[in-house]
Image (cartoon, rainbow, N blue to C red; front, top):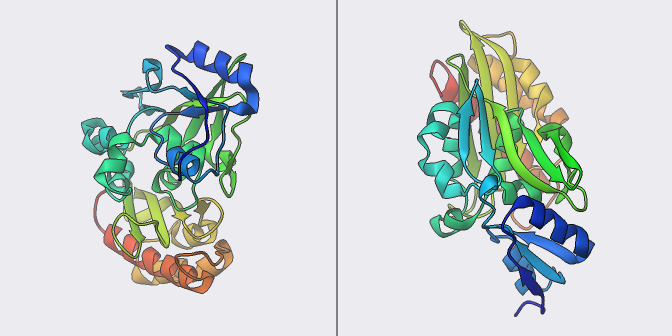
Length: 287
């Protein structure tokens, strides 16, 4: 199918982008990488009056590491994350996950801001930002605000992003030597939507897990922290027994539902297997 007719504008800066959005209201749609939006346009699931192309807004791109914090501009493309030495050194969870995002053609165009704003529950990067306890920086005509990742994702393709707002960046603490990270997902084929996935981040004190953030994706309507699973390993050595208890605790953490890729029961089973696999690989190792 072909997309509906729409107008097009390419603002030179963020202020102009916000002004155009304010002028057109719900009829205006931002486009950056377009890897999700173009598909919905072609299927006529989206029908904006005007596309506001923010691809040239340079202030929204780039990776910065300063004072123990990582800041990733919303227009930073997946391929840039994949190739970044700063991401590999200071945000290894994202470095691990980004190789699982779709295919190279998608990673060449897709942006981190677009992935977070679209909030596909099977997407890798929203789960990573949740595991990293990150913040989403949002601009609006009267200023900027920050929202914790745990509060940003509301439900199926639903976020805290309001009308007239735009994601400008993602921020989180850079990893130190006491953090370990692990990532894995299960899909029918590499590059397909995940049937279940896990982004894990553990802070280790000696041989004990001092803090655990286990973010599951493709097992609900948004990325979900496995609070019960995390509690089963916190304060303990990461032993096979503790890992098995964490996997068992997922029965109380997750409420998956059937979709085109697998049944709810299968997703629950796969989440447990991923817990065993990812945490097992993190035993005694570094990120």
